[in-house]
Picture 1 (cartoon, rainbow, N blue to C red):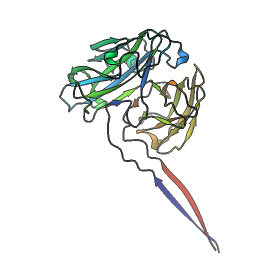
Picture 2: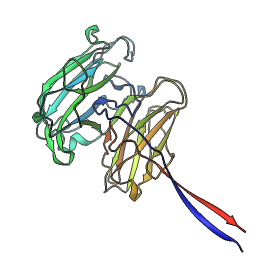
Picture 3: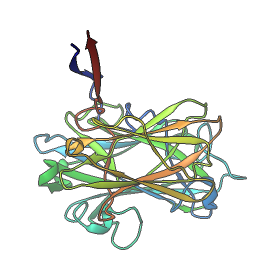
Picture 4: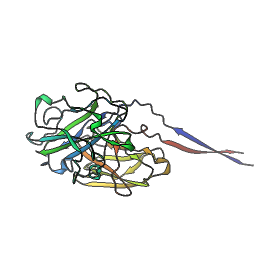
Length: 321
């Protein structure tokens, strides 16, 4: 007589992580720099619209002043991407108050309409300036109450927009939300997010970057979109129930997309969209995610709940004579 015993083994990949929510890009993303090009640069250099918006969430309980610090805000020098002579100007604008986040135009992938919503708190335009090369510049102090309170985010939201207002060079930079103007000190419980991500991929092959869109309870499918990957990368989706689901990749100066259904257990959790470099190169790209209504989904610099823990479900059959 033969009997069959079916064993279901659930193997959970465990992650230990330290919250460091204020650096943009965040430490989990493994992205070195954001990038924004001057508006005269051809899009085949890797920027589709020469503008990038980020939102910072300051917890309601935090009452001290904050600073938005920008690393290497100027154009030229050690990190930036030259296109001939450096002639580019990048404008940074910080917004708070009513409409900063709640205005629908602020939460799209296109810098159109009233995307510069809210009240302008601070602005500065940078060209080539050795004073700010490989250094930090701080906007602030900013009272958290100057942000727009958003109930579902449980905090005040401040927006920063970087735009290439002239020239054709690429500005590589990053942000830090700090409690001090001259040092990077965490704002406990803060986070940052964007709806369209423009960044530089690692230069070496086989390196991976991670993008963390948060999937709420109403999402039934998503489309991942990527621009100008130059056919030299792989896109893979990981979650609590998916392991290495491949996505479509773009060529030079074109967009590509792929649709992915969302399981019930993936709702109210973070996905991990991984981009694996297959060739060594300088490559600047753009990515965004939309839901079934073509609404943009936010990427969080510090993934909510941490990187997803994929649950392996293995059925093992044992035969006994």
